Length: 157
Image (cartoon, rainbow, N blue to C red; front, side, top):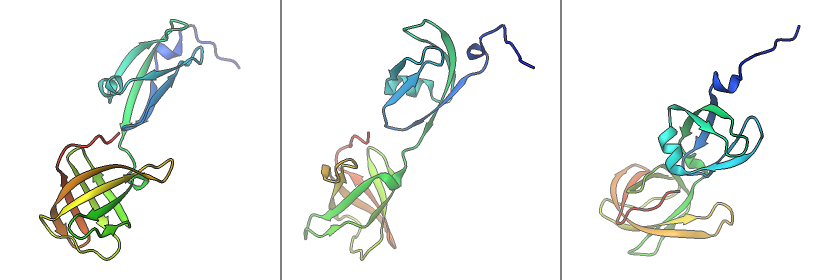
C-alpha cells in the first residue's frame, strides 16, 4: 500500500543538521540537491533553533534545525615549548581550547610550573607541519594536568 502526501514534508518536519564547531558548513537542498555554504555567523544564529530556509535555485522553503557539536580535541595536535630552556613537550592531549586558554595533559615527563612562559605550537592536521604559534603563561598545574592562558587571544577555527 502506497502512502501519498498532499503536503510537502520539508515544511512539516525540520531537517536536522549537525555541525562541528569551527568547520565549514555546506548545506544541501533536499529538493534540488543544490549545495550552498552556511556562514559561521548563520550557524551561530541557527544553533539550537529551528528556522525556515529558502533554496536560491529552486526557491523551495524548508525547516532546518542546527545542532553545533564541539570540535573533537583528540584531533587537535599541539606541542608545548618551554621558552626558558627550549624544551619541547610533544605528547600532549588537549582537553579544552578557547581563544584565551588551553588545558592539556602532559603524557610524558613533565616539568612545568605556575607562572612559566611557554609557546603553544599548533600542528596543521592536513600536512603534519607546524602551523600557528602562540605565547602563553602556565596558570595551573595539577599532576599532569596543565592550564595555560594565552598572552593574546588565538583564532581557534
